[in-house]
Amino acid sequence: MGTGRVPYRDLSALLRALPVRPEDPGTARLVAQLRGVRRAGEFGRRDFLDMCRWKSPRAMLHYRRHSAATVRRVSRAVLGTRDEARRMTLLTALKGVSVPTASAILTLLEPRRYGVLDIRVWQLLHAIGAVRARPDGRGFGVSHWLEFLTLIRAEARARGVTARAVEWMLFGYHQTVQTGRLYEPVARSRKSVKAPAAPARKRGAPRTQR
Image (tube, rainbow, N blue to C red; front, side, top):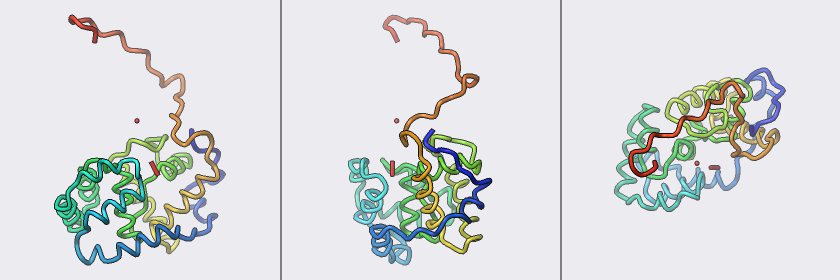
């Protein structure tokens, strides 16, 4: 697994022990660039590509396939609702936009209320017992996003900081306790390993982030 021993009894205890990290300068510049988006009620294709590139540049080929009109239409719908599940569903309907990338878009637009659902952060939350699913920090759905939002917003209110600040603190701490490769699969216990399926009967021809 990608996370070593975490010597804190729960998430609140961990965060009380961590200093608030200053924001990355490049991220701060991008947030400033996007400051007028919420007032405008939409973002354009250039801002969309900048936000996606910030989180996951490897999927740029997919992001670039979206026209300016599509980006504006989806962004208006996203910014026009306060339903968090709908916001996530709208963004991830765009080709190449995963839950982590969609979370990054929302975070860059409103860091006070959002944080990035990152592999490091989720692995840490799992190691400390704050979440139970997806120990490897991959394959997220809308339910994981809502669970994550609830956690970081509660801690942000308790500490008087932004949701992004909480997420950024957790991201930095995971870097200090990471063991092995970040993306290596989580080993299963022997009890949870299923027996291999029997081969299919023949009917003629034989029958995988920031």
